[in-house]
Length: 178
Image (cartoon, rainbow, N blue to C red):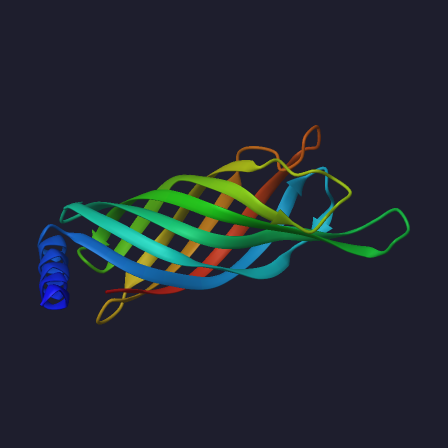
């Protein structure tokens, strides 16, 4: 009986959330990342994945928060000419303001992104544990909750202490709102 009551409560809550304009979903995709600044490197291709929560405030404006695992970094040549990888794994929390150009279909988004370093694969330099960035992009909602996004994120803080090194990431994503 308790299981039935919990199931009914969950279903009622999800209907109430939909009625209030709260959408929950998941997304993932490709990162095309590089470091801008003193580190002269080449970009790497990696990935991001996580959860999305959109709060529709009015028909043409909403706020979208995400919790993402995002792998970023760069590739560079050391003093001996050997190719080295800088792999930086973050938990990123973008908070995007979304303006719908075509109601419920096409939106422009912009906002800050707060990233917390969880792993780094380059031991030569010690990375900062926090990265602040500005992000902007576009989203197209397709059918039945399916959406695609393109976003560019530019770092506002240096990745390394005393080295001009800011993250730059272009993301292509596919997601689904439940």
